Length: 132
Image 1: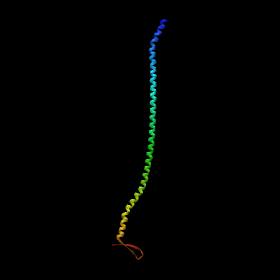
Image 2: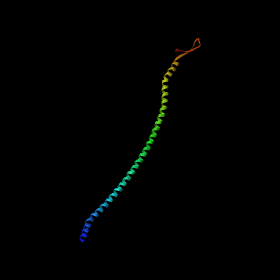
Image 3: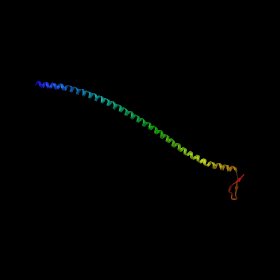
Image 4: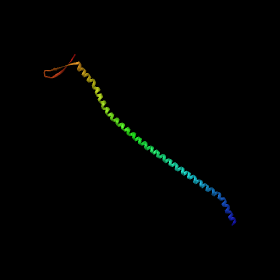
């Protein structure tokens, strides 16, 4: 029995450093896992913050794009309205410009020629062009 107790004591003395090493290793593992979890949570918080900032930037960009689209639409509508008005003005200018030479020539010929009214036997009135 004494021999047996000596063997148990010796075994306990041999196992004790191993048990202490395992306990130390377990504490270190807990500490590393805790640090890893904290770092992971911090990184997740930073990622979430970055995602929110990116989302806010996209919302702001969408708002600005809507404003620009409204301005472009308004400018296009103004251009269409102006082109309609310009179309009629251009048409009128072309008509007047094409009729002007004819009117000028007609007035010049009337001023340069002597128009003498002639009455025929049946009562018809004719204009006789006589050169001066």
